[in-house]
Length: 156
Length: 156
DNA sequence: TCAGAACAGTTACAAACGCAACCATCGCAG
DNA sequence: CTGCGATGGTTGCGTTTGTAACTGTTCTGA
Image 1 (cartoon, rainbow over the protein chains, first blue to last red):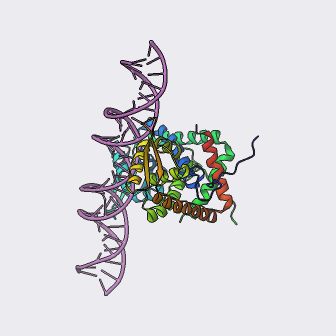
Image 2: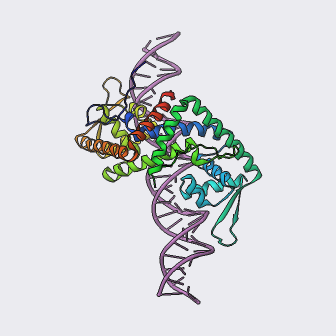
């Protein structure tokens, strides 16, 4: 058993930076790895891009929702959302309905077809999460979540 | 004091997915927040893009390095590296030198000017890390690093 | 009542990205 | 040798992205 190594961005020399130990870099890289892995799954299976998957996931979560709300809930720029919505609409996975009172607003819902894909996507997500637990161990997951939670807590 | 809430992607209903509890999403979002915060610093201060910052950081870390090695060390696509190198070269922050023996290889080094910026960048990075520790708490940082380490361990 | 601020959503445009094709060079097997 | 696969690095091209500007609509306050 090795003694646990404390990884930091320092190399002993304070005038250098070890990129591989620098937290923002490590975090970005880790997120990229996980995102890509999961993206491969839904891309191969449903032909979705990342913004489209997030959009679909958000609509499915709330049944009926507006574009602005989707952006707020999924941390996406409104142009990304707009384009994702159009793409999903062209596949007939969602429908839009202009609000009766405020005609700027469009309510978005899943079609039957969209719901089918959403259900499958949820299964996929859960099973990927399970794989993550298996790969990283429950303690790894717990620590990661705790760390993320700390960031979330500080961020507005 | 509230009891700690266990956050999961489930909403009780297994046929739904709570995006805000889904680990890949949370991780991507957290990384994005941190990356953006730090990027604002070096962009405002040195006018660097993200690939340029990573490239510069890697060159500074190793003094003399090739483009391929930069890509491997900083997890960037070779075209990204190529373009970042060109941009840094145009600012006269780095120099290239074709290898005497293998003329495909270019050795890259910092110029005096580049070194000045690199030093400042290192200071910036360290002080940002310190701010992170302050904001998230040492335990938050430790947990985050442990979680990331678990991912790194599994990834090739 | 009505002018202008605010807001939902789209679009035009430029920058950034990755893939694939490419050039130049090297290494190696026959 | 020499021909051909592998390697380092660049570039062309289609796609994706964010910014800003725009359309259409509602809200607000004088």
